[in-house]
Amino acid sequence: MQKELLEQCLAEGMSLDAIGKRVGKHESTVSYWLKKHGLTAGGSEAHAPNAKVDPQRLEELVDQGASIQEMGDEFGAGRSTIRYWLRKLGLETERSIRLRETRAACREGVQRAYFRCRKHGHTAFYARPEGGFRCGRCSSEAVSKRRRSVKRKLVEGGWGTMRPVRIRWPSGGLAVPPLGSVQQVFPRGRGRAQSRNRPKPR
Image 1: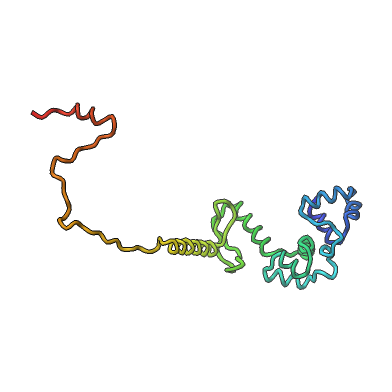
Image 2: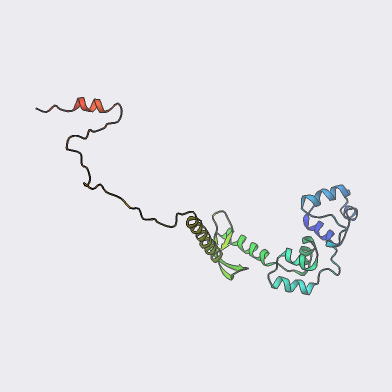
């Protein structure tokens, strides 16, 4: 069963039994598909569109860049109801538009494109290695925030300050061993072989 059909039935306030009669399925089958699509069974007020969603106010929220969750909170309705009215009025949320445009840019192999960011407005977005796009200004701010956080932790941990170290030298100066008193140390198994291969002084 298609999710769009179920959302439309729920938005009309239909119960499981009513949906089952419309699609010719048992209500248990309808309940299974509702759970699979992450929808709530009909009969609740959240899915009744009448007198709950004002189309004019919904258009204003779309122009303001509100999300589906924010629209649902505004009208006290579920997400399926908001999606139903968006499709009915031919409206798209800011996120839906950005997703559609970014998918098209990914198919074309574009590395930089201009979309609308909720924080910075219309600005440049850059392709991410794992797929999709991200606002360039949001990315720069995230890097700067991360660097400040790391620097603060280093300073709090004592790594951000350098303490002077005082070295006391012996009064008689540095003791230098006499020439020839230092023996050369070879790795184990090589010292004797090398000493035997050395030419003897004449």
